[in-house]
Image 1 (cartoon, rainbow, N blue to C red):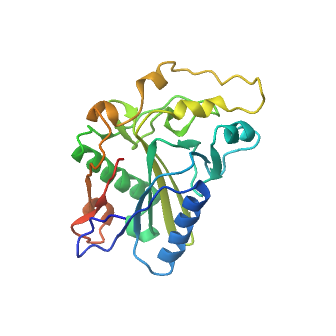
Image 2 (cartoon, rainbow, N blue to C red):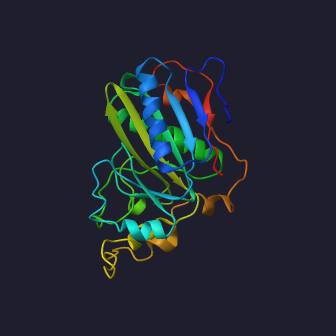
Image 3 (cartoon, helix red, strand yellow):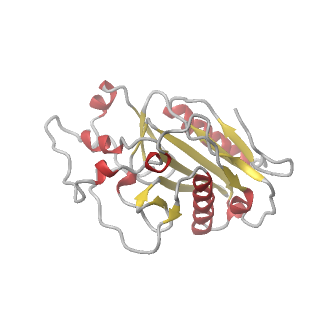
Length: 251
């Protein structure tokens, strides 16, 4: 576990080792309970093993994805407490931010603050990250993964969505999940519809998967020990924390 917390920071940084999907989700829920009980807020980075397809809180699963075919590919399936669409956790990095609701403000305010911090961290790695401006997004097929199209305020580079995030609030505590792609394998999500011969849904942007939504085009290679400090004023939400919140580990 690594940390770049400053002496006066009131955030906890957790860089946990790869773990099964159910364990990762259980730990995030346990951290929500700890924050509710008075512990400091958390910024956590983690990976998944074995590879796992996570479904949004209210997303249909059994009637949409072929669980047997997923299992045959060595892919677990888990449901996130947060919303959003399916994400394949394999060649990516997941973050979670857990804090009392008042720490970062309203859902819109907290979402914006976290995305600003993540974009700032990526820029320190050399990725030209920015936030998606206002504008409409095209409707997507129901089997489409989370990274299909960027929404307003999401982290993008060159118009491509780099991080998919979703938030959940309960009992005065907020949890925000997000996934940073290291390699673009999210198109595989469309390969597991229910039914042995069910074709994948039509793709209105055929070259989307070839373009990729990863940090690699900007970096040239995946850094093995690269880091980017996330400045605490971005995540402090007026709480007055100073120094560094944490280190973004990309590989």
